[in-house]
Length: 205
Ligand code: GAR
Image 1 (tube, rainbow, N blue to C red):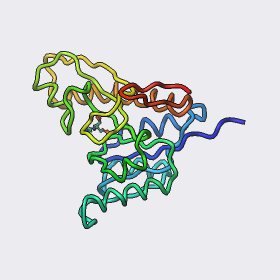
Image 2: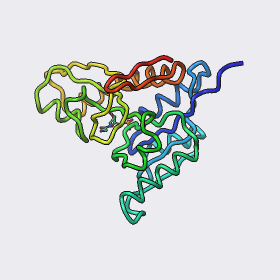
Image 3: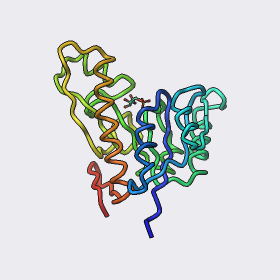
Image 4: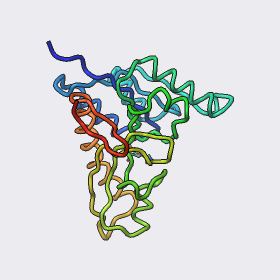
């Protein structure tokens, strides 16, 4: 009998192309994972529409609907928990996880970022790398901790900056490499397991 696929909950705030790459990969049973739910911090985004088209349950938790950021954080943690995930993937989810969320999902909450961390953390990884004038940037998948894009690194991919790049062309080129890295690494985590040892993440059991 095939092993039970790992349960993924994916969090999104926008276009959801990374989510789509995971949904497409999960269509193959050999991938070893399934997206069991997609959560968002806002309505009306393409990421949610992608989940709905794939028949995946969705939930939305908007910060402004809660009395405090802590209350919101606990609510998101509860909603994610209800789907009993093995791994929670932030794929363009533009909110920082709080203490309650990390208490429950620490070590199995990963985030993909459009720069080679620890360079250019924050909301504008592609723009900040372009403005700094680096010739190589890329994307980083890391295990979320209580800092801003400071967690232990699972995988990285390098992307050259071209002379005529704009923020948009650079970010789009990063996203092509980022999606491949995300799909490859999440699949390996699902099939082989992983271990966080200080700053080092090792795939495999
Ligand atoms: C991705 O490039 C992701 O790395 C970035 O948002 C994009 C989402 O694209 N996330 C961050 O910048 C987080 N700091 P998508 O909605 O098409 O998957």
